[in-house]
Amino acid sequence: MKLIKTKIKDLVLIKSPVYSDSRGFLRETFRKKILNKNFPFDIMSYSKKNVLRGLHYQSKDSQAKIITVTNGRIMDVAVDLRKNSKTFGKYFSVIISHTDDFSFYIPENFAHGFLCLSKSCTINYKCSKYRNQKYERTLSWNDPDVNIKWPIKKPILSKRDRLNGLKLKNLI
Image (cartoon, rainbow, N blue to C red; front, top):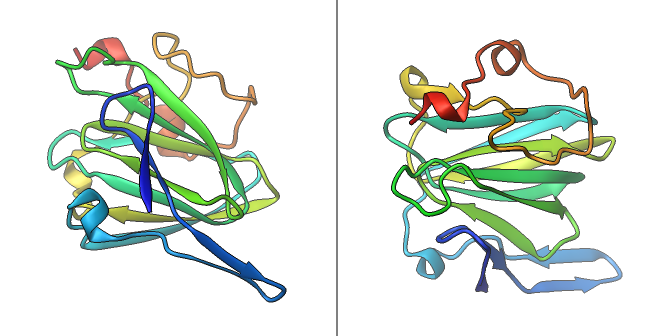
């Protein structure tokens, strides 16, 4: 396994070897010594095509996450919410499918979301802290100050994501 840097500090792709043959493949998705972090909590998410989940974050007890697509294809997005960062408010996006050889590491203090591009998709999240619903927040998926280039104009959103999205300027 090796880390591949992105244009945003601390946000990395985790490349792992894939062992495949006529039966399918085997891919290692996590080694503690690679990131030297503890991930005590896992979540699995299933979505249908054009579902956009996010952009979620916790205002306190922020979580680091490792995102691995186990079925389907997504556009995965992380937005830097570290107020003292040179890249505050900037985003990084990547297309990930279950056939790729990498996972996406998102450090604490980032908003995270994804759009399901295939008929359906299943995502595994490794989280550095447990969810704390009291501090769960949503950054608006279409905030013009972040200006994410989503490949869809009208995604399928949860009521929470549709009605409770905050704007970046309200976080400053």
